[in-house]
Image (cartoon, rainbow over all chains, first blue to last red; front, top):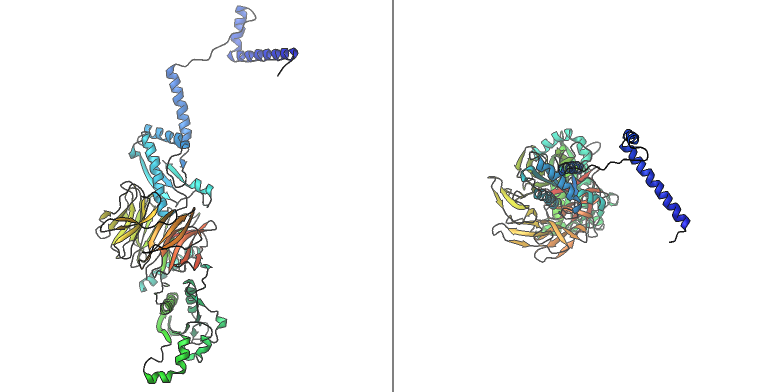
Length: 183
Length: 450
């Protein structure tokens, strides 16, 4: 792409104006009264700016902890994790939700949680009770690997007896194959 | 039986509203060409006014539902004889092509008591002997009444009419097939009434869905009803304490006791044929394994020990072994374990996997849920040939349970986004659906002979 000298000049001019506008706005934020006094003391045509604060490492860690706490608190609102058909392995997308619950349980050792295992309607009710327990167990094992004590967790499998969606299609089945953390 | 009637009478009034919702109604989905024609003549009523009960309607329905008989329409009957003596011409009955004619009479015996007498007549034999009775008497070889296949007279309480009608069906069925009838049996099942405060209900009804009675209602799931061999008790799983536990309940006295409450799974109870033991699934030691409990001593014996799923124990009729579902080979298949030697052998090999195996009452076959190409159907496998017969075309079939005479299988299936019960004959040729009026019906268990 080629531009004529006139176009190039006008582009530069516009960029310069934009930059000027930006710096004046940031000046406004730092305080008008300071600008007025410095104008009086140092004469006209000067501007002052402030740098971003640099946090001490301790402050930084505290802030990160706070952010993580908030994020974990949000994640902990999620109490259901879903499974593939005839499968009890934890899908990667649920790792962080479980990490959030583990963090909470580790920090609150007196807190207990019931882990319910559920399946879709396919297969026999008895087999599904066993499969539901396998799902609950895989959540328990996962939480245990993150430091949660076994004594804080109990399992109950409802198999196919308590579906959330009472329908016979792939979407309903996917929603019914789940483990639920109940505090 | 008397005790049963008294307690049911008490239950009827209190549970009437529940009963109407849970009642089932049979819809025959697949008839059979091999059904044999039979004439069922409405029983004569000797009193004034209308007959107190339509016995023959119940008998006709029973015989149709067996898949073995096809009662001919009442309008096609040449006459309405009340007993054998009323039949002047056997040939006009023989011409109908029926192999038997049922006739009967009902008369008042006392207040609330009726005398019911009936005869089952072979018109072909009647045609032969009826004309030649003198000759046969002279020879002294056969009784002149040998065309009467069966005949009985009983005094029946008005409250026992329906039961007695099923009894007549049993007599007719056995006289014509040589096999004991199972019309006076019951079915236990779980009914889930959506939106109810206590949606999970344990129900016992007649085998045909009539006379449904709620034995237990719970806010939490109920599962796996299993009959005691004497037909007086049910074992089942209840989650009423937010965990699975096995209970035993007397169906007449409503008395119930908690049998097990081990950590984790307490499931799939199955009474031994002699009633002394209960097979069950427990996962207290890790993976679900099969256990047998002595009901007198409560002593528990672990039968299987495998890190993968073992479940659904069912006794073989001799009480010497259990069949069960195991994942030990990768996918679920049915295995048999000998209780003396603890030797385990896989017995199913057809399709992708097989679950929920039940041994037939004669011990010569296994009925199971066969999974193939994503579909779950009821199938039968013969011992020892291994011949395999898919029996159903319905969808998501589970929980097969066999009638005590081995003629019919009741199971749970999906129909119109609802779980319903269905029947299929042992040869797969007769199929019927028992839809409930509202809610899901599942986990059927056919009672023993009562």
